[in-house]
Amino acid sequence: MRLVFYFCLVSLLLPLVFYAQEHTAIDDLLMEAKSKRYSQPEEAGKIATYIINQDKDPTITAQATLLLATSYYVRGNYNDAVINALQAKKIADASNAIEIKLKSNLFAIKLLRELGLETVATNYLEELHILEDNVTDKKLSMWLSGKLKQDRAYTYSITGNTSEATKLLYQAHQNFVTIKDTLSATGTTLLLSEVFEKTGRLDSAKVHLKKTLETLQQMDHTEMKALQQLAHIYFSEKNYSKSIQVFKEAFTISEQITNPYFKNKCVEGLAMNYLALEDAQNFYALKQQANILSTEMETDTDKAVNSVYNFINERQIERSEAKINEAKIWIYSLLGLFLLLLASGIIINYFYNSKTKQYAAISKYILPKEPVKVHKLEKIVLEKSAIVPEETERLLLKKLDAFESGKKYTNQDMSIAWLASEFETNTKYISEVINRHKGKNFNSYINELRIDYIIEKLRTDPVYLNYKISYLAEESGFSSHSSFTTVFKSVTGVSPTKFMEVFKKSKETA
Image (cartoon, rainbow, N blue to C red):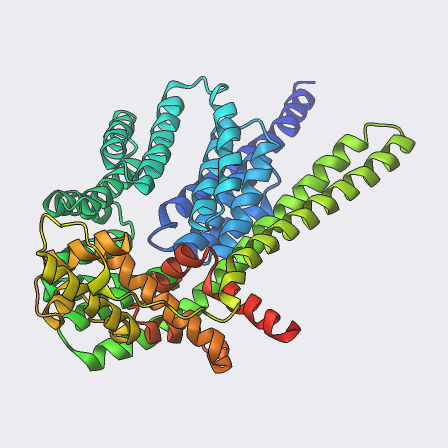
């Protein structure tokens, strides 16, 4: 009897032992993928994919999917990163694991913000605040508090409130130090260095960056972002040789992990240095490389944005179906039709309003430009300036009229010092006259002249509608594709790509 009893006991316990061993192996693989997600992202992605295919536990699958998303993000593949991040969030939301819910939500918010999808990110942030009320573990609560402070600091930094951003980042850093989360604490230090750089405190920024690099080296973590930021600081200090050296180090890492976004930042940084050193050959070679990388990045970003909207639509449909299945068949049919019509109406209305706004923003540029009425300055009664002598002010206004009629403002070397030299005056006088009579600072004045110039080219010369954005940027005097796009959108209300698209359509229908 005893033999039979022991046999039955072993038969019952053996599957439990195998199950425990299997999960221990999966946990070890998860730890390995986690340790390699930044230093060896491709290897981490392979391990995560293996776990996803092997394990059916939703908590483990959510963790592995989030690791896969992170590995794609480190490699600069935003489309696959956002697809897996949203999938991880979806799996985590269906589980009872609060920690993975929080982490997947936070990572999704980070990605959405980098893709410019602020509205979707805000919705997810509201979900996160709801989850916050369910956190009972003190360590997890402190970690989440630190992450939310980081998020608010990011918002303050964007809006220019750097003092509040700095305060929140120091608080977040203390949270992470308290719970011994070295990686999160290092991330906060890196963000602090960015804030210090923005406010011109380069020494403080360098101190924080060097601490960050030391910690990252000890953790076998990629130093790409920290190096790229340090190179920017050296550039600001006009230490071009050191800046080039550090940019090249960052570029090597970005090549190793095939991250086109950071590769592009490094290429543009190197180009800036060679421009400052008046090395035209290297500058133009790097600008050409940056243009190719920019196109690659735009394609990936567009795909990522589309993937987000596809995911949202799919989730809305799934949730609707889940609710409808609980009702009777006739309610299901009626409600399904109603939701479909409502969704269609919202989408149509959204696109209609979007198109209306775009056309409204562009319509004033489509019609021929009215000739500018040149005032006879000698008849204008000028309000006396406390800085500029009256006669000098009149002369400078005449010179500005002549300057606007030409195209010297498209020179990429344009600066207030250059213009002052051209007008045989000083920068203080030029700045005062532009501020008083043009209602803007020097940079805004030059940028608007450049945008008006390129819009006139697009309007009068159809060939320009076929040029790449990078060419239009260079033609109008901007040093980079991104700065041109930013200024163009701030002046016209739409991006250059959308402007040209609408302009072409208006030409075809005219």
